[in-house]
Image (cartoon, rainbow, N blue to C red):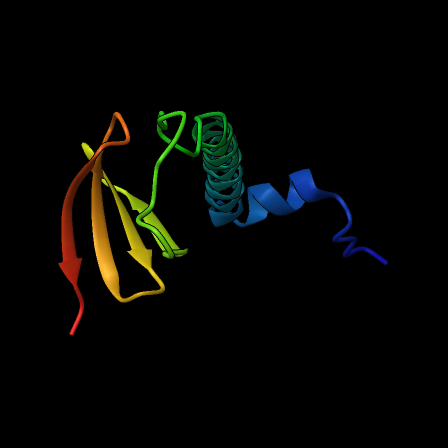
Length: 102
C-alpha cells in the first residue's frame, strides 16, 4: 500500500486547489456565522420594542356601537363599529369624525 490518501497534508500538496477550497469553505462559514449573529441581534432589538402605541385612558363609542376592528395610525385611532361606521379618534381619545360605510 504505497498510495495512502489519508494524509490530508500530502493530498493538499498534490492538489493545490484543495488549499483554495479550504479557505473558501472557512470564509463562507465565517460569513454565515456573522450573518446569524446579525439576524439574532436584529430580532432581539426589534422584538424589544413596544407593540402598541401610547393609548388614551378611555375611548367612548357612540351609544349601541361595539368595536369590530381597531387600527392605529401615526396621529389617529380608527375604530370600525358593528353599526357600519368608521370612527376617527385623536390621540387624546376624542371623536373627530364619523363616516358611515355603504
